[in-house]
Image (cartoon, rainbow, N blue to C red):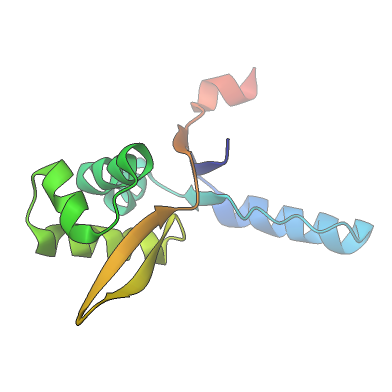
Length: 128
């Protein structure tokens, strides 16, 4: 099962520079492809809104053949579904494949991940 993680970190730059220094010193790269670090809970929620999360879940659960099918599953306007899927594609969570059917062209959403997790560790838990 492939998982993408949205991780909260109150000091992402400080830790990123420490990881970069360690990678330079040891020669071992520290690449986190399946993760996005957010410096506030609000930015995490802004990036992965409820609507986008529902859209992602519907793509994973229903495997629609087009955005039209996805919009029907979600009972949402196709324009809203298109906006949400474009954002999910920009985040690297899904791919929109252009498929020609006769004279019509459709976009088929496919997921790169099976699930999304949100990681948040309170400061007090970090100290202990």
